Image 1: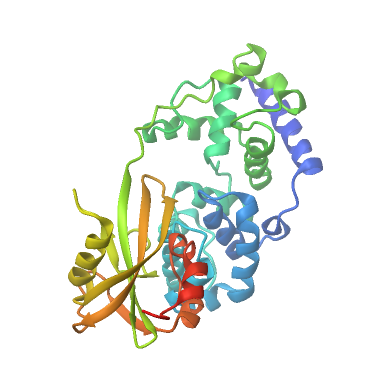
Image 2: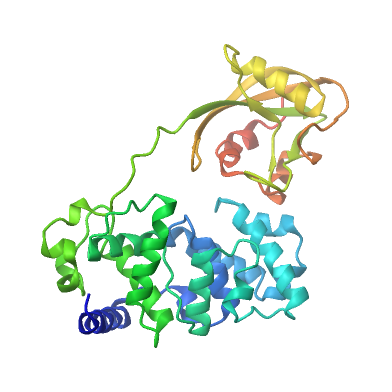
Length: 362
């Protein structure tokens, strides 16, 4: 685009955003901490899902020092169900660093902010531009989709090596006088108008600048590389009952679902039936001998790169003392105490059944 066209594009986009933007709680503030929390939550998660979590999280941790002082388990409990728990762990670690090294004040320098745990290029640019008016283009999936159609960019949006092309295009268009509003306007355009499935081109405020619209090839963009089929794993899990209490274990803080509590179990081996796998996994993971008494539920759940089919069994404790091989902590709790602990979303799917039967007649 020529400079005059870019100027016109910026004005139309910002005018549209001013008049049509959705009213969202993180848009009512310039507080960098709150903006930061919202951007972390919005990664990989829909706005409608984030809003109640954001409000509850800020009620529980209203200021960065309150988050820094908190225990990780408190943070994970507040995050429970939102998924991608590394986001919560990194935010907690970063808050502690800011409290210790920056007197609890989010650093305005993008380079300093960008070195904090979990702060990648997108969050660095989003917070710096929205909270501090730094002229940095924030490029997320919505922005990539807008740019790919606007400029007919053929680089696949889901190839990491393409990101620099989109970042350069976004930086070229960025309105350096209003970088925060411009970035939010680009994201808003992708979220509500230039959508993935059915873009509403007739209502787009910048359709006259859109190359794909002019050439009637909007449906050709964005370009994506076909993904490999998602693998499906069989999992067997045991609710081990002993004296009206059940055993839960806590995963190590690193890795998938790090720091969360769960019931012992694991992958079903080749040619192994789920009940046998349940008994074996419990013996290997926590050193207990159990007897399967009831198939409680079959749960299907999808993660980013794989899916699971989880068979859940009620088990009776037979012998042994807990010795952990993998988990880092354990508790014997009553079923009524489950809500005190942060569990993966897949576990929540069978909690209603578990509450009904608990350890009765085991």
